[in-house]
Each structure stands twice: as structure tokens, then as C-alpha cells.
Image (cartoon, rainbow, N blue to C red):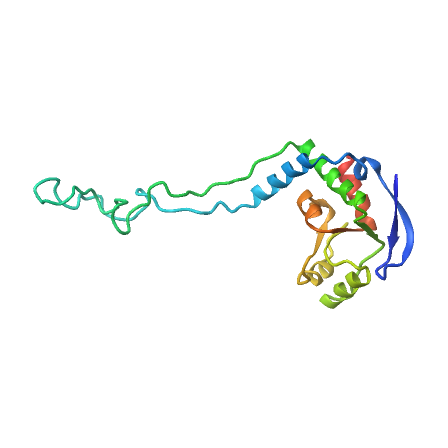
Length: 207
């Protein structure tokens, strides 16, 4: 097992922790990570682009004028795509871009993402991170003392004060361990784990 230092909010070592090799020491395959990240990004696409087709436009079904004898081009009803305010031909409709990757692949990709962070020496374990009040300056001071400017902070339970304090800090995100995902792990340079969240991750990935 890999041994990682546990530090306090001032960056001082207080103890050590063993990280399970089944999670933090697996072979990393970029193709698997790529597949899962693409799945996550596809699920985030809005797919809300939409137009009104001929059948969706409000208007009379009456033929505008008779077919022959007027010298004009033949014309149907007012909802024709050729007329102003008419329906759109071949326009986009709402759709979902989401698709699923097998659960085993998603779980393995999560292990690979965590392993890649450990290999890059980009995992930091904190003993505790509690705030007395909601204050952005507090999280800025802590990340400064830890020399962390771009990080994903993983907590083991809901912490409203921490989540709201970090909301306006650029390049810092707080996430609960049950919401941990491949995209966010790879997006941020540092992965900051609270000591309690390590057990939460193990309980999720080893069950």
C-alpha cells in the first residue's frame, strides 16, 4: 500500500495513511478515461435547440388563393416554409446526447483517475477542514498555506459552510465522496482528500 502524509490546514504533517492498492495503484489506460469523460460531457449537453416545424406553427389551413389563373406561383397555406412566419424545414429538435458506459468500466475508470493522481504526486490528505462561519477568505488562506491554487476538495459529508465559502474561489471545487467522478478528478491539478473521505471512497469502490 502507498503511504501518504496527512497534513493539517497549515501544511504541517500530523500522521500518515495507507491508500489501498486496489484503488490507487491500478494500470491507467487513457482510452478508458477518455470514454468515460466523453460520456459525462455528453450527458451535460443541453440538447435544447429547437424550431417550429410546419405542423407547429399557428395559422389557418386555408389555401391562400386558387391554384390556377392568377399568374402567381402556386401557394398552399400560410404555414408554408417559403413564407415569413412559416415553419422551418429540417431544423433541430430537442434531443438527449446522453449514453451509458457499463458500470464496471465507470468504476474502473474512477480507480484509474485516482491512480493517475497518486502517480503524479497530486494527492493531498487533510486531517480536518471545519469553518466556524461562511467566509471566502478562510478557504483562500488555507489553500494558500497548502500551496494549492487549482484543486478538487473531497469531503466525506455535507458541509454547507465549506461549500459556500469555496463557491466564489476560482479553480477550487468542493465535492462529496459519493459524487466523485472521473471528469472532475482529471480537470483539477490537485486532489485534496479529507481523511474521512478516504474511507468513503474505499467503501464506494470496494463494495
